[in-house]
Length: 303
Ligand code: PAF
Image (cartoon, rainbow, N blue to C red; front, side, top):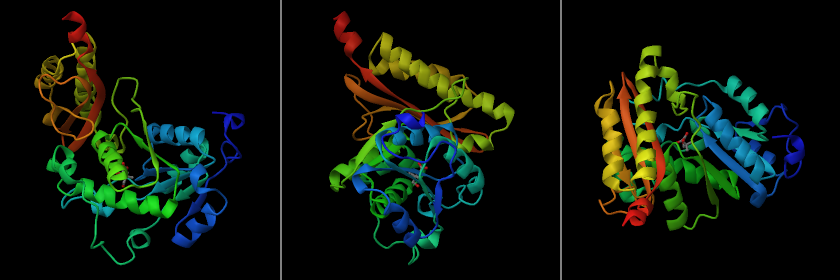
C-alpha cells in the first residue's frame, strides 16, 4: 500500500516503528492517536507474511497501528515449545517497518504480568474444551487472558486476527460478545506459500522433507473446499478431507467440521457456515490449518 492510500499520517513506508517496552512508554506512544482510530495486531513475534498481511489490513482501517510482540507463557502447556519458540525482535522490527506499523509494544512477561501468573483469568468455556483446547488444555484460556489484557492496555477500536487460528478467532469473537468488550474484531484470510502451506512461525521447525509432508494439511483443506463447492454436504467434505489425510505421512490429531460460533462438530444435515479444521503432527512439529466453508447450497439446488 502506498502512503497516499493511508487514512491519515502513518509513518513513511520503511520508517522504523516506535518500539515501546513498558506500560509508561506505551501510554506515551498511544497519546499521539485516538482510541477509536487505533488498530491492534497481536503477535508472538517471529513474523512472516501472514502477520504482515494483518498489519497492512490494519493500516487500511486505522490511523494508528500498534503491533504487540509477546510470547505469552500463559498459553503454553508443560512440555510445549515456550522456550524454543522463535524470537527475533530485530528482524520483526525491520519487517514491520515495511508493512507500516506505527508502534510496536514488545513487553517482557513481568510487564504484562507484574504480580506473576494472574489469579483471575478468562475462560474460553466450551470453546476451550475441544480441538486445540482438548490437545492443549488451558491454551485458549491463556490466549483470551492475554488478549483481554492487551486490549485494555492498547485500547484499540479494531483488533485484527488471522483466520489461520480459526478457533482462537472464534474464542476472541465470543469473548468480545459475551463480555461486552468495546472493540471490532476483523478476521484476515490465511496467507499461504505458493505450494499451499499455511504460513506459521512453527514452519521454521520443519526439515525440508517434513515441509513436503506438511502439505497434506493444505491439500486436505483444499479438498474440503472443493467438496463444499461441488457437493455441499458435511459428509462429502469430511470424506474428501479424510481421503487426503488417510494417505498422508502425518499424525492427524483432528480433522473436523465445526460450527464457527461454537467450535462444536456440525450435524450431518448442517447448512450454512462451517469451518473445516485440521491439526497434525509432522515429526515433532504440530501444525494447524482450516477453511471457512458454506454448506448446503448445492444440495438444495439439486433437490
Ligand atoms: O496468535 C497468536 O500469535 C497469539 O495467540 C496471540 C493472539 C498473540 C496471543 O498471545
